[in-house]
Image (cartoon, rainbow, N blue to C red; front, side):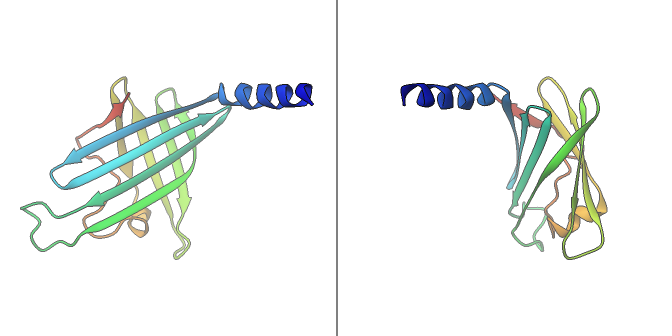
Amino acid sequence: MKKILLLATTVFFSQALFAATDHFYLKEGNHIQHMKITKLNDEVIVTADVDFEPNANESDAKVCAGDIAGQAKFISENELLMKKHAESAASYCELTIKLTNTGATVKQSEGCNYFATGICHFSTASNELKKVN
Protein backbone atom coordinates (compact mmCIF):
# COMPACT_ATOMS: atom_id res chain seq x y z
CA MET A 1 0.00 0.00 0.00
CA LYS A 2 2.83 2.40 0.84
CA LYS A 3 4.45 1.70 -2.52
CA ILE A 4 1.25 2.56 -4.39
CA LEU A 5 0.81 5.77 -2.42
CA LEU A 6 4.45 6.73 -3.02
CA LEU A 7 4.11 6.00 -6.74
CA ALA A 8 0.91 8.04 -7.02
CA THR A 9 2.51 10.97 -5.19
CA THR A 10 5.60 10.81 -7.39
CA VAL A 11 3.52 10.82 -10.58
CA PHE A 12 1.43 13.76 -9.32
CA PHE A 13 4.45 15.91 -8.46
CA SER A 14 6.34 14.99 -11.63
CA GLN A 15 3.37 16.26 -13.70
CA ALA A 16 3.22 19.44 -11.63
CA LEU A 17 6.87 20.13 -12.41
CA PHE A 18 6.00 20.59 -16.08
CA ALA A 19 3.21 23.12 -15.40
CA ALA A 20 3.84 26.86 -15.26
CA THR A 21 1.34 29.70 -14.99
CA ASP A 22 1.97 33.38 -15.64
CA HIS A 23 -0.52 36.07 -14.56
CA PHE A 24 -0.88 39.48 -16.20
CA TYR A 25 -2.87 42.46 -14.96
CA LEU A 26 -3.80 45.98 -16.13
CA LYS A 27 -5.93 48.60 -14.38
CA GLU A 28 -6.77 51.80 -16.26
CA GLY A 29 -9.17 53.95 -14.29
CA ASN A 30 -12.21 51.71 -13.81
CA HIS A 31 -11.11 49.19 -16.46
CA ILE A 32 -9.52 45.97 -15.22
CA GLN A 33 -7.97 43.32 -17.48
CA HIS A 34 -6.51 40.00 -16.33
CA MET A 35 -4.88 37.23 -18.32
CA LYS A 36 -3.45 33.87 -17.32
CA ILE A 37 -1.18 31.74 -19.51
CA THR A 38 -0.69 28.16 -18.38
CA LYS A 39 1.91 25.91 -19.97
CA LEU A 40 1.45 22.21 -19.24
CA ASN A 41 3.94 20.06 -21.11
CA ASP A 42 3.34 21.02 -24.78
CA GLU A 43 -0.11 22.55 -24.20
CA VAL A 44 -0.71 26.29 -23.70
CA ILE A 45 -4.02 27.56 -22.26
CA VAL A 46 -4.90 31.26 -22.27
CA THR A 47 -7.63 32.67 -20.03
CA ALA A 48 -8.54 36.36 -20.26
CA ASP A 49 -11.18 38.33 -18.43
CA VAL A 50 -12.21 41.97 -18.33
CA ASP A 51 -14.35 43.98 -15.92
CA PHE A 52 -15.08 47.55 -17.03
CA GLU A 53 -16.97 50.28 -15.27
CA PRO A 54 -17.28 53.53 -17.23
CA ASN A 55 -14.54 56.11 -16.71
CA ALA A 56 -15.42 59.82 -16.51
CA ASN A 57 -15.09 60.24 -20.30
CA GLU A 58 -17.48 57.30 -20.91
CA SER A 59 -20.60 58.73 -19.27
CA ASP A 60 -23.03 57.01 -21.67
CA ALA A 61 -21.39 53.57 -21.35
CA LYS A 62 -22.62 50.72 -19.19
CA VAL A 63 -20.79 48.33 -16.88
CA CYS A 64 -19.64 45.20 -18.68
CA ALA A 65 -17.59 42.08 -18.17
CA GLY A 66 -16.32 39.33 -20.41
CA ASP A 67 -14.10 36.29 -20.42
CA ILE A 68 -12.59 33.84 -22.83
CA ALA A 69 -10.41 30.76 -22.52
CA GLY A 70 -8.87 28.38 -24.99
CA GLN A 71 -5.86 26.58 -26.28
CA ALA A 72 -3.14 28.73 -27.85
CA LYS A 73 -0.13 28.10 -30.05
CA PHE A 74 3.19 29.86 -30.28
CA ILE A 75 3.51 31.46 -33.72
CA SER A 76 6.94 32.84 -32.89
CA GLU A 77 9.25 32.78 -29.89
CA ASN A 78 7.35 35.51 -28.01
CA GLU A 79 3.97 35.51 -29.74
CA LEU A 80 0.89 33.40 -29.06
CA LEU A 81 -2.32 33.00 -31.04
CA MET A 82 -5.53 31.83 -29.40
CA LYS A 83 -8.66 31.12 -31.46
CA LYS A 84 -12.05 30.52 -29.89
CA HIS A 85 -15.27 29.84 -31.80
CA ALA A 86 -18.22 32.03 -30.87
CA GLU A 87 -21.06 29.55 -30.30
CA SER A 88 -23.76 32.09 -31.14
CA ALA A 89 -22.19 33.12 -34.46
CA ALA A 90 -20.15 31.76 -37.32
CA SER A 91 -17.01 33.62 -36.33
CA TYR A 92 -13.88 33.22 -34.27
CA CYS A 93 -12.27 35.38 -31.66
CA GLU A 94 -8.53 35.58 -32.20
CA LEU A 95 -6.23 36.97 -29.54
CA THR A 96 -2.68 37.72 -30.65
CA ILE A 97 -0.49 37.96 -27.56
CA LYS A 98 3.02 39.39 -27.64
CA LEU A 99 5.07 38.53 -24.57
CA THR A 100 7.86 40.70 -23.16
CA ASN A 101 10.07 40.32 -20.10
CA THR A 102 7.74 42.57 -18.10
CA GLY A 103 4.30 41.76 -19.50
CA ALA A 104 2.16 41.23 -22.57
CA THR A 105 0.17 43.13 -25.18
CA VAL A 106 -3.02 41.78 -26.72
CA LYS A 107 -4.74 42.44 -30.04
CA GLN A 108 -8.21 41.05 -30.70
CA SER A 109 -10.17 40.30 -33.84
CA GLU A 110 -13.72 41.54 -34.49
CA GLY A 111 -15.11 38.14 -33.52
CA CYS A 112 -14.14 38.85 -29.92
CA ASN A 113 -17.09 41.24 -29.65
CA TYR A 114 -19.24 38.17 -28.91
CA PHE A 115 -17.21 37.50 -25.76
CA ALA A 116 -16.82 41.09 -24.51
CA THR A 117 -19.49 43.64 -25.47
CA GLY A 118 -19.98 47.36 -25.01
CA ILE A 119 -16.86 49.19 -23.85
CA CYS A 120 -15.26 45.87 -22.83
CA HIS A 121 -12.39 44.55 -24.92
CA PHE A 122 -9.40 42.24 -24.58
CA SER A 123 -7.05 44.45 -26.62
CA THR A 124 -4.54 46.46 -24.66
CA ALA A 125 -3.98 49.12 -27.36
CA SER A 126 -0.73 50.89 -26.52
CA ASN A 127 -0.69 49.61 -22.93
CA GLU A 128 0.89 46.48 -21.53
CA LEU A 129 -0.56 43.96 -19.12
CA LYS A 130 2.03 43.80 -16.34
CA LYS A 131 3.38 40.41 -15.37
CA VAL A 132 2.52 39.59 -11.75
CA ASN A 133 5.23 37.74 -9.83
